[in-house]
Length: 129
Ligand SMILES: [Zn+2]
Image 1: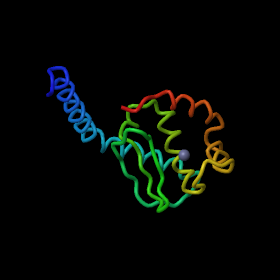
Image 2 (image 1 turned 120 degrees about the vertical axis):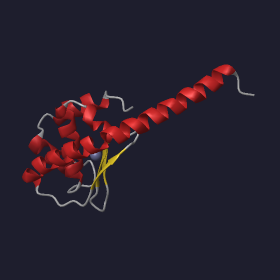
Image 3 (image 1 turned 180 degrees about the vertical axis):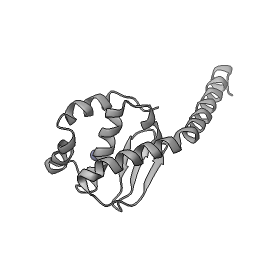
């Protein structure tokens, strides 16, 4: 038996999901344009090869890089301060060259962001969703 409270919870859960889907649809293109622009900018420095840029609706990550060279970003990136957007873009770009979080990887990131540690910390404090 579903009591009133449980029913209300299910209902609000559906509302939240629907709200997020709507938000995703509304911001997907903006996120893509933003990310594409920043990748073009930073990749002038790095000159890495990549395949596709994909905007996703994920709950746990801001970005990822696949072995095939596809770059994925969370649409919520549009809500972040520009320095954090740039950090995420640079971070994923550097994974094209170093598919790990080795010292070499962080050296690549540090070319653009010598203070990447502070940005990383700041980003960790941001909740997704
Ligand atoms: Zn990483």
